[in-house]
Length: 411
Image 1 (spheres, helix red, strand yellow):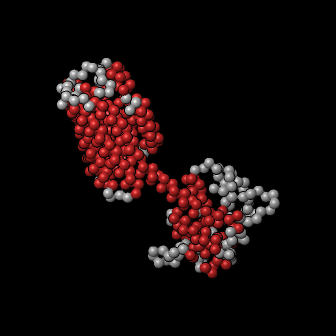
Image 2 (cartoon, rainbow, N blue to C red):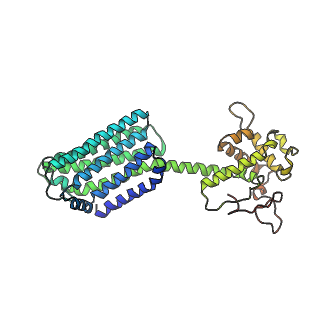
Image 3 (cartoon, helix red, strand yellow):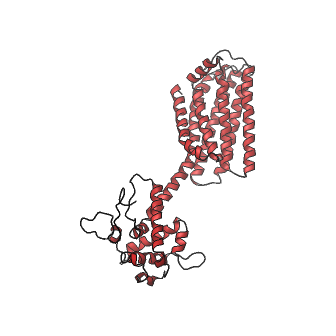
């Protein structure tokens, strides 16, 4: 792996962390958000400080030939602890149990980091080695123990991570399971990296030179392991975000028939919003307009929800006649056609729809959409709205005070 690859991976991980900073600030009390946010900068720091130019610069600035070695080993150990802590937090469970496991994780790996710097201080490594420190000092007292300790600590955390993720993957479906399987695959690649390092060191113990495994194969495997684990970590959260957006878009699209119905009732139904408005704003405005329209027609709709009331217009308030008569009829027919509630009450009511969540509005909108397509008294021209006299601006209603649209016509 060239020097550029180290910095590219470090920059990508740092960029991913930068994208999460706003969420970290907003949800700092969420332990999962903190765990993920801690993991990304540590992974970025591993590749940054493991790059040979950075190693040389750190040694030069500190005046110690190989101080970068325990620095990199310490960051790798901290990353191992962060991975285990992430799995503990991600898995959940009783709060006290989770906190106890987190304290144990921090305590054990904190002790390992202290031991790494202590062994380095006790050992002797006068010659700077940028790429083959592990194998070059594989037989040096104390330095040898430091190398074995950091490899063992990393292997133990990686194995723990793989076991936890594999057990959990067998209990969950969908993209979460795929993400956990990818983390397991990345963990096995990390174990391969540990094996490469340990083989190269053990070869020096027996008088052989397998340094290429440590200096060439191991860095490549480490980069693949990091990318695989990063994708596994990101996939569930990204998929959840996409699922939420898809659900919102589906609701927004299905609410269109009811929105078109209520648009002719509310005084501001023709007022548009800017084209750059987000889906959340459009969805919110559409539901507000629908609820306002249902409230305006509430007294008319609640008098009788039977099918025969579809042709009754005497109960419609005078300010809404005659344009709203057919809209009241359509809503009445849709309400009568909705399924019965679990408690056995007939159909639904405007009151229950208004007091419920958006799913009630969606069901009512679906029923109105069916009427628009199949009922002769609700022709498709309703989608286009009533005919307008020549020269009258688009979006203005003949029976309402003139309202000038803002932005685009509709939402």
